[in-house]
Image (cartoon, helix red, strand yellow):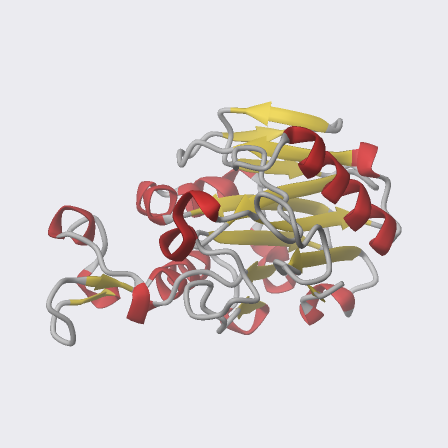
Length: 246
């Protein structure tokens, strides 16, 4: 099974974090949505998604019953959680409970993981264009109560998501972003740089640049990932997971 393990978390011995790939050829290749579809709102039957979660959990040695996931709505509502389960109408989760994993599903949007090894607090945020433009990253950082003394320790990961080249939008979307993150010159329509905008928000929120890792992979370009823009309703969902281990 192909998974991405962000190195900045592995080096702390405090957190475990990962981001799944589609794994189309090795997991459920004949399914309605082939691969490791972990989306609760896709065409895959719920029992298939549940099976995929168990397959993933078994592969990584995590308890599938100790995962909190967000039932995302492209908003900015964030929940502090202390138990597993599905949290409706939520696009961000925060906890400081050791062993409780937090999960965010994506397919072109970015999953953002923020972890403070000093206070041992973790947060996961669903940052598509709507959430990013509405300020979910800043809200998440504020809710994590990251104090100035801890900012130099805070780590942030931006998952594979759609790239500037492939994120064509209408002017009604483009105008919601600062001009620095909109390319109105290179293409016939505006293109938004979602990755760098999220990076900018994290840095403006107080996370040091050297402690932010932004994945270079584009979900639209790379068939290793699901892409809603490329596959529409046939797109599955990847999952970003993080938990505190010590």
